[in-house]
Image (cartoon, rainbow, N blue to C red):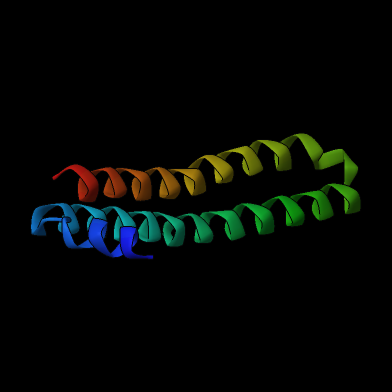
Length: 89
């Protein structure tokens, strides 16, 4: 226990700021990934349901589903870019 206290006492203010920034950026990216994850899950579920109801339109539904997944995944990538900016700037 005393070793941990000694190590914590030796952490400088700049190091502490970097540690806090990394933790905050990781938390922010985690939150940014929740929305697209829910969106893609909902989108695929609805597409499967639509294809089950009307199999003849499966090709069109599948194309639209892939476009929706790409746009939704772009949100996660934007969150990742913000994570990198917060971490290194």
